[in-house]
Image (cartoon, rainbow, N blue to C red; front, side):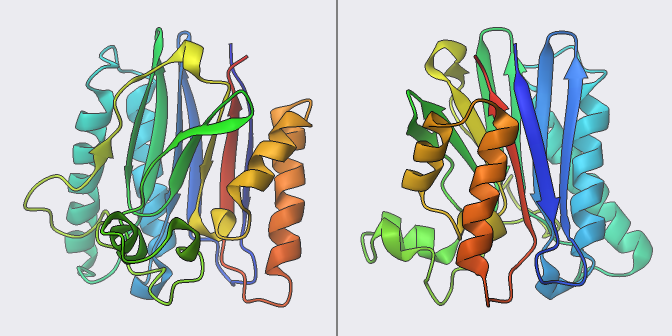
Length: 241
């Protein structure tokens, strides 16, 4: 039912702090992408830990409807425990975005500014909203959506994993019927900052496979990132039909 392709590169950074994972359980699948926060240190350890929790839990679960709720909480608890064991409570932070199939619907959850785009008829149908300062400013109508990519506080997050939660900080999207989905794109900010939604859609329309779509999008990312200190960039392209 699904075809997919994955990509994760360090960009111009010495360490790739992004992690991506794919897992199967019967006819259902889980896709997860995490972007470790480099400014805090040990982001690669945090993103890998959270990714592993999602992948390992998915292959054995039999309760898909509650999977995201339970796994975000479990991953957060394990991350906090690992911080304490290593005595690095100020380090090991990460974003996370996850997509799972559940019979006739898709379930989506995220925390931070790693995004998930839903495409239908070669157009963006929905996307997750970043837990960032610029996104908050868009929602309060202080700046335009188009200003997010170049905003001076683009990397300032309001929510992430690895920070103590008084209440759960992840956000779940209302389940999306499979019939409304053509494709998905999960991506870190190092990817989506360097390609516009219009370009994603145009390349989707003209691609014959998720591999080709991802390859063509990467060309745009590299072109727009030329002569810049490119961040790690990662993406998972999923086709439903």
